[in-house]
Length: 150
Picture 1 (cartoon, rainbow, N blue to C red):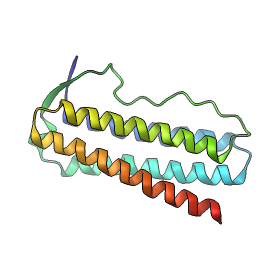
Picture 2 (picture 1 turned 90 degrees about the horizontal axis):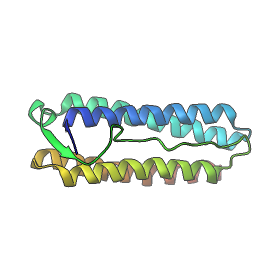
Picture 3 (picture 1 turned 90 degrees about the vertical axis):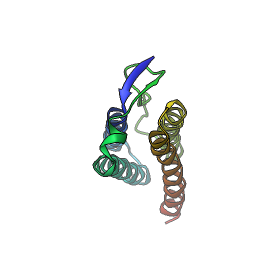
Picture 4 (picture 1 turned 180 degrees about the vertical axis):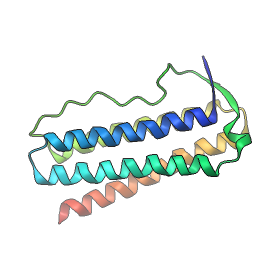
């Protein structure tokens, strides 16, 4: 079991999204297909926006909530970017599978953190993040669909 403050976990989440953005940028540099490059650029921008939104969220969250300690069952890396090794011939479907893995990781961790929180305010923070992450994925999926129909 591990103890951390809410602010630390939110920083892990922010860093996770930043690493995801960097992963998409790296993959974009290896992609051959223009649509795949365009999708990776879009996904990278969205991950960067989520990282920035979390940083802003921390700035707006009351100190009492951020300073709250709680216990949960995770190792040192709460949010783990799965290893991704896509070749130059990666398809839009391959990229969307990776994006779904990233999304599922965040939702799973936020949901688990909400369940582990003893403080109602902290629980609400992670429940809201889980819901917002899910809504963002739905929006992103729709936008990708429209983008690819162009």
